[in-house]
Image 1 (tube, rainbow, N blue to C red):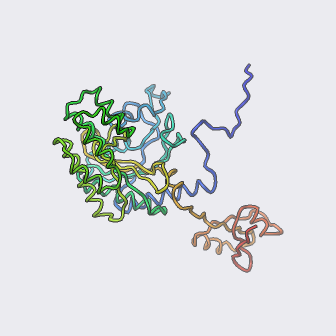
Image 2: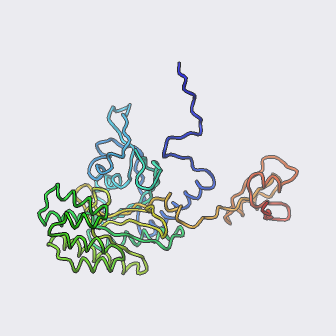
Image 3: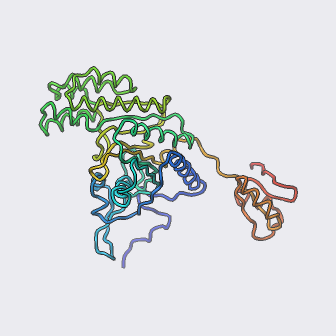
Length: 383
């Protein structure tokens, strides 16, 4: 026997929630608007499973999210399985296995739910919606620019036309420190100082790079200012090559989306550990949470790829409210043909299942905005 009281059926684990009307429908229609924008640029949709065997799910790029992955034993095969925490590694697996012989560039899109062991950053959710694209094959600034431009167009499809793409180069600082001869321990300490934006600590720990790193730290902001600082910096060959690639990517984005707001943080190296080049983080004005994240990586550890994952939950919090479909109560005696025509016009019809004395009152009870009566469609006054 136990004295524990039974859980309330409405109680859910931390970080999980029910999505109720009309928010659930709003999310679904918004995701489809995003996916339609992706499809219009030739990105073909794939649908990976929610669970995979641990070996494949956490191999290659998937190793970066291993600590966020729920694991369980498959009672059928007795192999360990994992619940996906991020869909990009799954799409990479599909590209390198089932679609390994598909023509390149390979453009794939996806949408689905992910589950994480713990919430990340400012978010409180552990179940995270994702909608994204992957461009597999080419390794060029134009490919990086396509990801940014298509992502911006998808966000515009849900009403977000004023967004900012923050560009970073995760390999830049490690390459610079390695070329300057920093030990792993000294590099880690300096990296933490850069991560905290601690200019005093960077000056203290930076050695011969202190002046360069401090200048680059303070150059974070609009893309042109940061690129000018990188151009002026004394950089060794490897770091210089990365800086030139970033400049070429910015130029390619400007050519495709001239009005897109771009910022750069030259010494920021946030991102998943599998990122190998230019990365993107998307923000909306006045909001601190990420709307999306992506960047360049190796698909299957060998093939160049880049992509962008949008987070529909955050996107909807930042986007203008989307009006739900107007709801029309259709009494049992109403013309079914007229009701069908209303659905074709974009209305949602709610059919009465029994005769009622006051159709307008019944319509209000069922949260309808209109009622179909003999005289035609009538809008209900707000109470």
